[in-house]
Image (cartoon, rainbow, N blue to C red; front, side, top):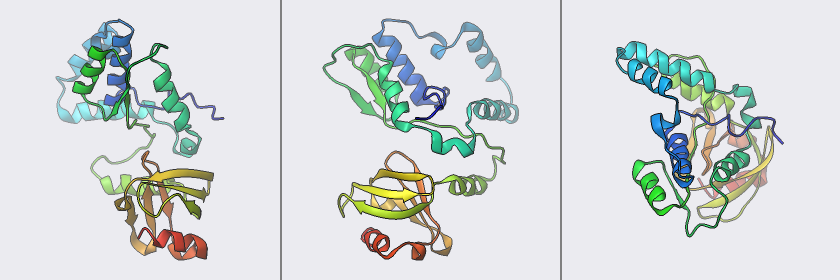
Length: 222
């Protein structure tokens, strides 16, 4: 079990987090002023919006970095616990429906009107990293460097997509869902980057270095 608080690893400034909190408030019959923040915080946000973009970008960067977790602890994030924490914030009662989908105001208003929970299909887990905001290539390289390395492919539920893959990585055994074949990207030097349905990236530095059984399974998707 991870010692990371599932409520603390998700960005509070992300639209999914804010709209989810608004829906929780609506189902609890509570107001949601200042996007769930204090009046003082709301005043600070309005004042910051008057700053020139160069200064405002610096403010956003610092706020984002303050919520980021250490890249070395990405493997300790329990996404199942994170998902459960979002579901558990709603009042415990029977609901006629549950809405799932990407964050948007229309869906939030519909949930509030119907008095049913809404759960976002994606959440933002910010990572603490110092970098040049004008160099997205550096951010991509950083993402590749912290992605778990896929060492062995034990099996797949189907040779069509979506398909559940059972694998071994440098951080232990796990399983994930491959939603589309386009989620397997070829990189330079024979490497692959595989994106799971939940957004977790798995890296294969050299396909030829995999065992024969893993390569045969993988070839069915390439």
